[in-house]
Structure formats: C-alpha cells, structure tokens
Length: 319
Image 1 (cartoon, rainbow, N blue to C red):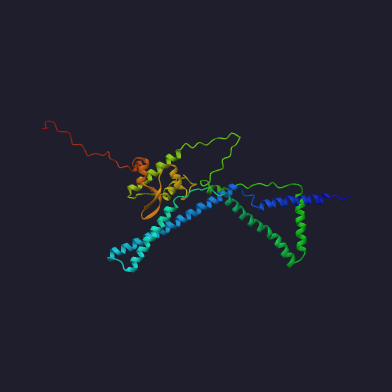
Image 2: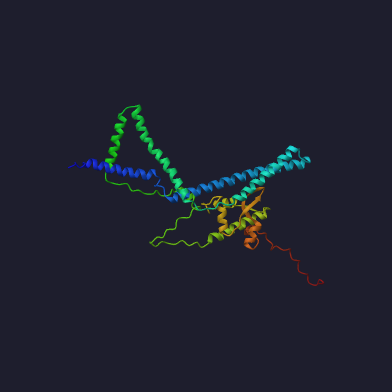
C-alpha cells in the first residue's frame, strides 16, 4: 500500500492551489468588472473629443486674430504686399478649416462599445499584471545566480511557509468596486446597468423641474448677451455660471451641450467676440421658446414713468 501524504504536505499543497487560483484571477484582470472597463473606455473617448475640440478652437482663434491683424494693416496702408496677402489668404483658409472641423466634431455622443474593446482592455491589464508577477521570480533567479544559492533556498522556504499558512482556506474571488473618482467623472457618460431588484426600493421620479430652471437661466443669460450686443452665449460660459451657483457640478464642457438639448435648448457653433464655439444663439432660442427671451427683472427698463401732468386750470381762466 502506498503511503498517504502527511497533513503538512496536504495543507501546503492545498494552500499552493488556492494561492495559484487567486493569482490567476488577479493576473487575468478578472478583478476589474465590465462596468469599470466600459466607463474607462467612454471617459477616454470623451476626453479625446474634448481635447480635439479645444485644439481646433485654439487654432481657429489664432487664425482669426492673424487675419484680423492683416486686414487692419491693409486698411491702414491701403493694401498688402504679395507676401502679406498670401499670409492673409492662408490665415482665412486655416480659420475655415478649423471651423469645419468643429462643425464635424459637434457634441460628444455616447456610442455602443464593442465587447471586443472591453476584452482588449482586459488583456492589456492582464499583460501588465503578468509582467509584474514575473519580477519576483526574475529577482530570485538573478539573486541566486549572482549572489548565492541561499537566496533560492530562503525564497523557497518562504513560499512553502505562505502556502502552509493559507492551508485549506480559499480566497474569495471578487470584482473590485468601481473607483469613486471614475464614477464621478463618468456619471453623465455611462448609464448605470438596469438591474431588477426583488427588494422594494424608492423610485426616483424625474419631475423635469431642472429643465425649467435651466431654461430660465439660459433664457436670461442669452437675453443679457443680446442686450449687450452679442448674438448668443457660449456653452462654456453658461456652464461656468451654473457651477459657480453649485449646479450641474458633474458636467463638463463636452457633455453640457447634450444636457441643454435634453431641456429643449438648441445649440450650434456661434461666434461671440470673434471666438467660435458651441453655444446658444439668440435667434435659435427665440424660435424654440416661441417668444423673445426675457431679461431678468432687475434689468427690464422701467417704461411706466410718464411726463408730468399739466397743472390744473386756475378758476375763472378761460378753458
């Protein structure tokens, strides 16, 4: 009869198996859930879109400034030399090209993510983690070769001790929660997965009150801009004003235009002070509201003042 392994060997072997399974789970990237990967992919797309929009806006402003300067010189000097005229043509061409790029980019839209992209991102995580796992092994081998064989002996004894200590207690293979900062950054980019819960829970009902408040704020801001001689307001300025009040803090310049459209507010690329960005135009808002955008109460001119009435006719004077 073959001798059965002793409890020490059995315990050590079981611990080694549990540690191997846990390491495989971690190294394969299975601790990262699909929701986190999806949010990271969409967030990267939004950041790339915002970066492209900022780049084209910056280059368009630069080209407009250069063209404006050359036109002013032409008006002052009665014309431009051929080289300067060529620079003006080139600047105008660059401005039109970047404006066309802005029109093509439009607002950031969330598109369906191919499952293959999620698998590819998980494989990249797995490749990085597997590389990390090889470093201790490579260190032991290098230490044993260059320093002394005692390094290998000590490392082996340490590994066996860890396996024995683990014994028959398996690891709980779980998926880590989505980081809070990622949830905050992608709160408006990715919808939470719809899961049916058997337990009763309070249902949050969107009353649409935020749409009314946003519409009033934008209407007054655009009316003020018109009163000051501008054709509209850029979305960035509207968002900054709202966030100074503590509203819409989770939005960015890339996602705010979509929020405006959800409230029935039209957006388009408009020029304000020579700067072309996505914004709300007075004429388009007037069409959407079906009335002229109203100014805030404190800016409405007082039309109730009238000329002083003539004094009553003195008695006995001819009428």
